[in-house]
Every structure is written in structure tokens, then in C-alpha cells.
Image (cartoon, rainbow, N blue to C red; front, side, top):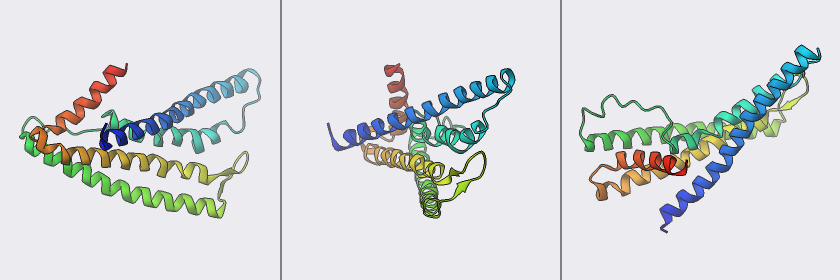
Length: 187
């Protein structure tokens, strides 16, 4: 197993763990909502904290923790209007430029998110409400999610550049087909 495959295996394992965290947060949202509805309408005693914990922690966890795995599985939005009108080489260049621009944008979001999360932690910032909810917990979900997304982008850029020579620019199709085939095989 080469270094690229080992790095991908480690990244997949980390993505799987944080994806379980996202799934657990969505399941917790549903459970808390059902309990809150039952308590509100049948016992006339709603949970005072349910909407706060969902909005401040569970919803952001569900979103940010699933970012990297969504890219790995090609679940992201892709504009493929030009794909059938341009050559494979042009598609490779479009994919490379798109990945590099995404990398730069995500790097800014990651740095800003980490800086803000660290500041929120240092200042012990809280959300007011049913109780004082620490802001830094939800703030650190941004750099965790975007950090993994950035690693996945690095892996894809590496694949685009290094495998270009081997596959005559068809690596764009190979990347998308490989991850889609992985999903079918693991189902």
C-alpha cells in the first residue's frame, strides 16, 4: 500500500467517525423534537432547552461534520453543463482549477473559523437562553468540518496532478467513478 492509499484510508476512517457524529446529531434532533412535542401537547410541559440545543449544537454538527464525506462521495453540487461539449483535457483543467479555487476559499474559511472559535473559547462566550450555552463548542465545528474538507481537497488535487500522466487526463472521470463505485460496493 503506497503513501497515497494509506493517507486516503486514514482520511476515510476519520470521515467515518465524524459522519457518525453527524448522524447521531440528526438522530438526537429527531428524538428531542418528538419528546418536546409529546411533552408540549400531551403533558403541557415542553422542554425549555430543546430548540436551543438543536440550533446551537446539533444542526451545525450535522452539517459541518458531513462536509468532507459529501465531497468524497461526490454528493456536492457540480455544474456539468460543459462536460459534454469540451474535451477530456479541458475538463481536467476545469476540475483542477475548480479544486484549487475551492482549496483557497476553504483555507480562508478554515483560518477564520478557527480564529473565531479560539476567540470564543478564550472569551468564554455564551448563548443566552434557557441556560448559558458555550459558543465555542459549536464554533469549533466549523474548523473541524472545513479542515477535513480541506484534506479531502488536497487528496483530490494530488490525484488530479499525479495521475494525469497515467490516464491521459481521464482522471476526472476516474475520480468520480471510483468514489461512486466505492459507494455501490460498500452498500
